[in-house]
Image (cartoon, rainbow, N blue to C red; front, side, top):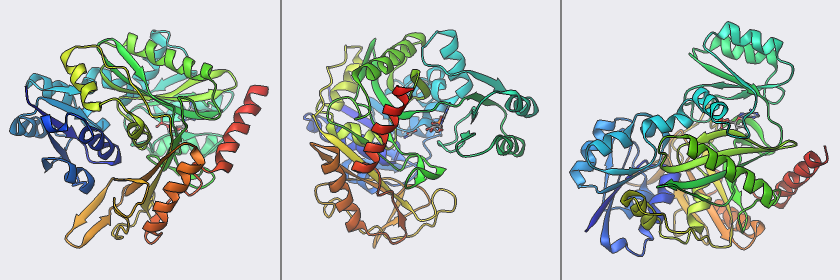
Length: 434
Ligand code: AMP
Ligand code: GLY
């Protein structure tokens, strides 16, 4: 049967997915289409057709899927998942790789996420309480002995969480809640440690783990500044990060498996964000999709055919075993100057896939005009080095950023450097001594 694959989403993550699909040994056997709110030039060049549409509008996605005769869809971002695009496509006879709306709540509703963990005895859940009344939430903050993470229950693009004792004081946390129009918030124990991400391919009873990645959420070097969607990330050869043991990976994997077991019929990518603490591995959050940037670390080293994996998922088959190149990766995002608080759009992007040298270039929220590619107000593009060591991968990424220049752009040059990696190792060593 000839196949038509529809990719939904237009960020750096989806460019990485498009490239993984395009690299399939079976690429000649299927057509590839994509739709997204922005015309991602990297994706547009790889596909047989590209449609600009609002991917949160499930009717529009279903109509485009019918238009191109999609036999399979891959959903990148969380918003369409939250809107039930998988359910809507299935009703229209198109299998989509991604969780249905009910299961996507593991990301979309942070109160559901914690209550689910508590009810299903999923290990690694911090103390938490859920509030709809902001005055009651403020009282809880006053009475709570220790620091807290304040989390709006709904989606905020990774930018809604505030942590007391880290970014803000308890007084500022209360002010944040009182001034907000949040309908529901989760207050939870502040976890202290090192964060890491593990993503898994899930379908038909299989939960297949991919190598651990560490993202950098803060806007500025040295982990200063506001939270962002993620400024860059690295992974090591093998499955662990340099500060992790195999046991840490194992604990995280058990948590992922317990989560999938407790959900109805989860399929797609399950993203676990963990904190390695003095008391072991705890869950910061789950996402119902690949991470962005983490997908750009994981997919370039995936040697198994991504298309074969999603087709097996659709056909109800066991997923093929996943093989990964034994390589380290470093991904660095270039974002518009002033991002995320006061981003300035309109800088011309000076690097392209040819001039990026040994690095892979993934476009995100850019605007392609007749005379070139320009930044918008969201993350612009990412460069990824893949090499035997993190240090070599970091150098490759930096060489590509040097081609891009800094005009109108901001990037974190510290991501993946030996100094930062050593800091993480020392941090975890000090936690284990506690
Ligand atoms: P989230 O949107 O849930 O990924 O949260 C954004 C960031 O807030 C995470 O990457 C963590 O750095 C931080 N965070 C979330 N929950 C906690 C917690 N319980 N303790 C400490 N930091 C947290
Ligand atoms: N890298 C964080 C996220 O994708 O949510």
